[in-house]
Length: 209
Image 1 (cartoon, rainbow, N blue to C red):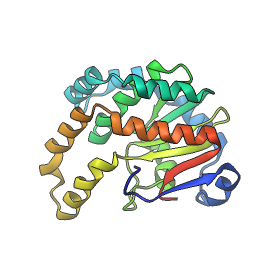
Image 2: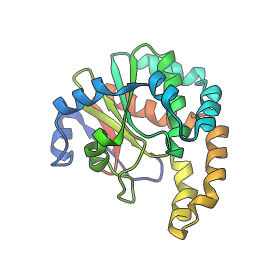
Image 3: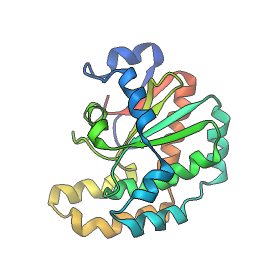
C-alpha cells in the first residue's frame, strides 16, 4: 500500500542492509517462483468466491496510459503474488495485475500459496503487523526483491482499517468489493507501476521497511 502508509524509498546499494535480517534466501525465492501457479491455472482452480473472480476478470482491462508506463520501463520483471482464492483483496487485485501482465511483454506473473510463501508474508507484513494476502513482490531477472505491495490499495485501507478495529469487517465487505469493481484496478496498478519505475531507477519501494 502506498499513500498514507509510510513508504521507504531506498537506493539499491542500501537495500540489502535494511531488508529484514531473516529475509528468505533468493535461491529459495527462485524455487518458489518457478513452482508457483500461472495466473491461468490459479484462476481455473479458484473455487472460493468463484463468481467474484469471474466478475473481476471480465472487468479487468488496464488503462492504456498504465500499459504505456509499464512498457516504457523495459527490462524483464517477475511479479510474485502470495495469495489464496478465498481472499477478497486478492479477488479485487490479482485479475487486474494479470490483465496488465497480459498487455506488457516484459512482465511475468506467478501466484504462490501461503503454505510456501509464508516466510515472505512474515518479512513484509501489513501496516498493522499482519502477514496478509495478497503479498506481491517485484523480482528482477536474478529473483532479487526490488519492491513490494501489501494487501490492498490505500483508499480501501482508509475505511477498512477502522472497520477491522470495530469488529465490523464482515458488514463492510460489500462496500469493499464494490470499490474494487468501480476502481477497475487503477489504484493498485498505479502503485505497482510506480514500484516498477522505482526499481528501474535502482530504488526500492516497499511499505513498512
